[in-house]
Amino acid sequence: MTNFRCTQPLLAVALVVVLFFAIQLKALAAPPLRIAIIPGGGSGIEQEVVDRITSQLQDRQDVVISTVNPDWYVVCNITERLDQVSGAIRYNGNVTVKTKEGHVISTTAVQKYNQDFSLQPGVPLNKALVDGAAREAINGIVGRAVGPIQNAVDIEMQMRDKVISASQFANADNYDDALSILQQIGPETPSFESVRKLGEQFAMEKEAMRLYNDAQVKVKAGKYGEAIGELKQVSSKSKRYSLAKQKIVAYQLAMKPKSRIVSKNTTTTITTTTTTSTTSVSPNARATKKQEKEAIMSEVAGSSR
Image 1 (cartoon, rainbow, N blue to C red):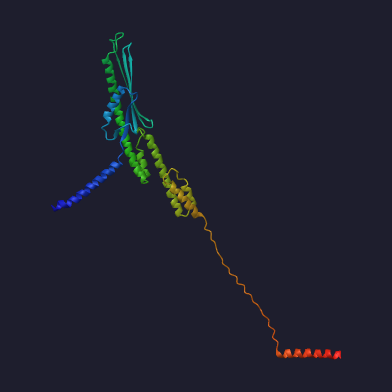
Image 2: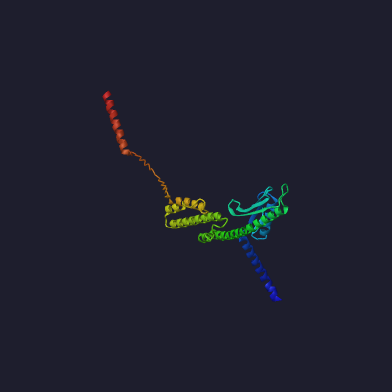
């Protein structure tokens, strides 16, 4: 009992892990192919062909029959020609499979001819012969068309799985493996043109990554000019284009010489020296001058007498 209780949490964890991986695998699986099967002229015979083809494709897990946002169109056309004079009954039918872009994947044609040799003037054509010719035309066109459609669906779904795998490698910047997978998809694939364009995109991203990495090496060596030259070659369609532009601006700033501004604060001190001259007069000198003055005054007085 104890062992059973212990194993219950382990079983629960294991179940969660299994469900997680199941959801992840489903998310990585290619989406089903949406196919619109429609009558070309809207006749009852054409609708019968549509119903027959639909019944043979609708059980596939990788196909959704819908006229809403289809990936492919299957157009069924049957023309009826009755000649009352010669008694000829002719049905021409064709089924064309094409992508939503208009690329023709396959075309199947059938012709059924009957003649009513018992026809009398004014008597309608034998209804049994007319109905029989119509059934044979329907069976013939459906039998011929379904096989090529099934094969084209198989090729398309294989291509989608490979594109998903290649995109996962490309998202991890492993462009060599991504391109190697895309090279396995041949021109018989209905969406080959889209695959070719995707390969060109991966090749462009691979080159952009090389240029960016080379620029980083040159920067470490102090070769900013050469690094900028590498980054300018990155395609504007690359996911690294914005980063390359940012690096170019940063490297251009790094190349500019740094300007040094030296501020010199010079303080000039002007010292003004004032020299004051003081004449010192001694008391003896003052007395002498006084005596000289008195002598002069005396002489002047004597002269006047």
